[in-house]
Image 1 (tube, rainbow, N blue to C red):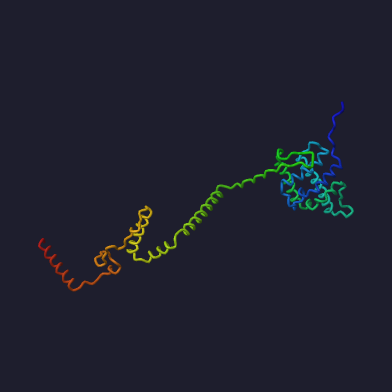
Image 2: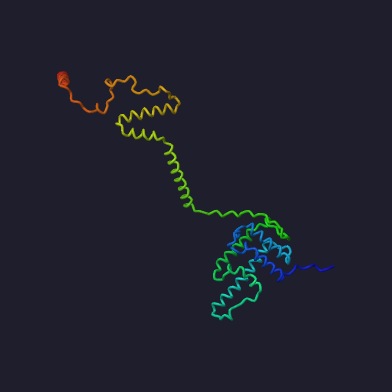
Length: 282
């Protein structure tokens, strides 16, 4: 009985093929690439790397490929840091640290995105890749052994709802209410007929008594109309009315008039009779 076959150990040839394929997929390392933020494009690129990496590690997954990328990039940054520290120490040109690993030189295409003096961007990029690993759904990405593997599209991650305090929530509701009232008032103004505004201006110019009578007549007409009882002969203005016998005082009638001499004599006689009448009871 033969001994079980052991897993193939990662060789320099496999790693070199892995890095070469990685260089051909800028969607995974170049932030200026148009598809850098496209999860589907990135996963399709990872599947291509998977087909290379699983040659030495059968059964490997997309998560393993991501971790491998993070490992080689982390080592690359460490080498950059050593070079930078060597230059800052005042070492001469011949004494500046020079990496001996061929992997460092093979990764020169990511040099512009891995500057040690700006580690914040690199760290942010690694954090994003780490987040992709944590959010990865195994049921959505199935590892295959061929380059023609199809990666199911990932569902977009829902954005975390912004939490707001009770005061901010109240302010937001008040703003919405004010906006609604302002919108409603503007709509109501546009719905009022222009002729109604003209009527209102005319009413303001009338004598108070005449305005009251006019408003009463208008209200009566509107009431009958709202009840559906208004007809062509409903409105009758001053029908059978005589201005000479009218008891309604007009603005002119309200001015006191000086009695004539005959009226003054009649009133004097009446007053004398009343005085004589009441004097008999004293």
